[in-house]
Image 1 (cartoon, rainbow, N blue to C red):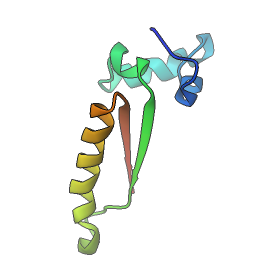
Image 2 (cartoon, rainbow, N blue to C red):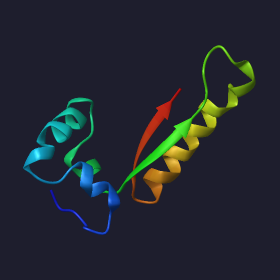
Image 3 (tube, rainbow, N blue to C red):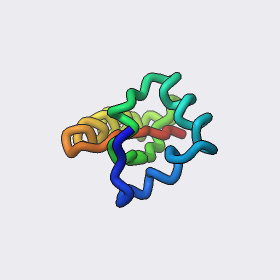
Image 4 (cartoon, helix red, strand yellow):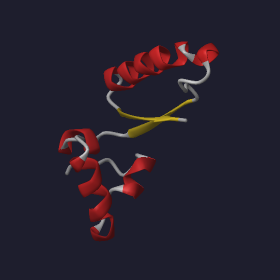
Length: 79
């Protein structure tokens, strides 16, 4: 894995003690290339029970596209 030590997200992936985290992320579909880029967390409050927030699901998908286009790896968290 090539990494840039300037990325704060490196702390969750580098080192022997972070092998379980790398394994989990690879197990859910992240590639070695995904994990070599900076990881950008995206928070989203969309839930099915609140139709007033329905548009946020679409907006979060667009934000993920932008993060990928800028060279990052997006990770979305929905409530």
